[in-house]
Amino acid sequence: MRRLAATGALLLLGACLPIPDLQVDLNLAPPSYRAPLGDVRVDYVVRPGFTERHTPAQLNRTAYLRYRLDDVPDTIVLLVPGIFGGAASFDALARQLVASSPGVEVWALDRRANLLEDRSAMRQSLAASDPYIAYRYYIENWGRTGGFSPPGIEEMFYLRYWGLQVHLHDLHRVVLDARARAPHLILGGHSLGAALASLYAAFDAAPNQQRRYGYQFLDGLVLLDGSLGRTGGFAREDIGFAVGPLRLAPSARELEAGSGAPYSNSVISPRFQIEREVAALLGRLAPEESAPAGMSDFPVSNKALVGVRNDDEYGPVPIFNATLGHAVGAEFQGNLGAVILGGLEGLRSRSVVGVADGFERVSWASGDPQRERTDLEAFIRAWTLADTNFAEWYFPLRLALDMTLLDPALEDVAGFLPNRLVTVPTLSLGAGRGLLPSLNGMRTYANIRYGSPITVYVLPGLTHIDIITARANPVVPILQRWIAFFTSAPN
Image 1 (spheres, rainbow, N blue to C red):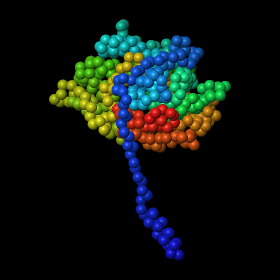
Image 2 (tube, helix red, strand yellow):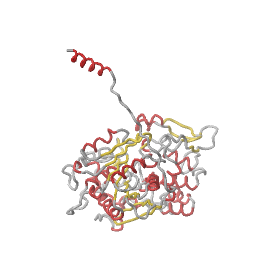
Image 3 (cartoon, helix red, strand yellow):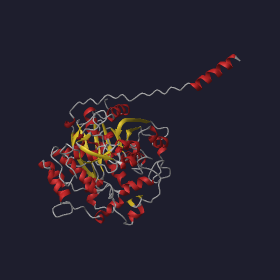
Image 4 (tube, rainbow, N blue to C red):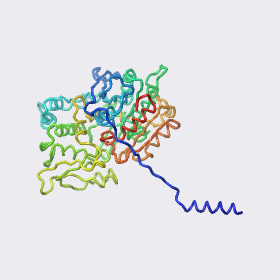
């Protein structure tokens, strides 16, 4: 009886006392560089892609930026960009990883659509150190003689067929290039690119061969603030996308029938991306000059123009911008769009609408480095590489549509292995202020890969863009240790 009473007392006491919940933050040392970031060599490699029969032969190609220091790599990290993203979006992360990791190369993929862009005046501006060459060509004379004239929708009819199968076959060709160059290969992706990399792991890339599924060509899979069920793989109906009366994308069936633009041409349009790139050129080559009237409705330095357009505090959806600093001498108004689209994250946002009293123009300050995680100069450099760019002007809607139609489990899906049979070691990193701010966001993919070695972390304070652009990026030390565990690469 005494024992029973004592047990009851302990149970009662346990019910009254809180169960301890010890929280330990990530304590990551910043990367230690063996060479300056600027010493990392960067090559742009264009190679033949998958032969898509509706596409002119010369356009069946893909490319990648190759970041390296060592002549003989032990490990290649191949990274796939997110939606509307190009290879240069990984510039900051790639330089940091290579400069701090002996034996590691980074290859950053360009999808085939990136090779359709007329960036001739961008290159001329860089060669002449004159951003106004590009400004006149793309902005001032848009659609006029001597200026940039975007191709007609029907000129790019073949984009209607650039879906998931085409991109996975393109990716497989680059995977084979990497396998031939290094004994170890890690495939990673950001946002939609993370979902695309996950689908490649289950893809029947080489039918009738002993090693045929994507994961069998990989030593590891890295997902950066993206996951099936979050940035691809939703098992939706083929009905396209619309917001009220605004049609963002037709269905896959409508695309093949010739209806609608085959690339994103609504909110995120080629013109929107080109203007961002020209603004970055102005910010790099003439940072302290005032922005041309065609780029801003109020006086602002070119450097500040890039900040205002890309900082989380001033954009309509904070998680999709980087933390770059803050505007000085600006007149502000509330940012209702950020509140509607970003929830609590949007409460801090403001719209820059002009110049405050007592100032001649808006300028820029770097701010608190504990919060402002991305260096604006490095961000501008990534937007102004000579060979390729940060953005994708003509994102093929067919790719996104195909990815939304798939069930993430991939059970009984032709051309794929069920995801429960994919066993490649996987590292999933969420951004604390991004698309995967908690472990819950990674649950779908982890559950359909049950039993597989999957490691997950959430990196506090980073937005969805910061996770690939941040200075002293916490992705680097985590990835270094993870690579060393699964490969023979030195730590």
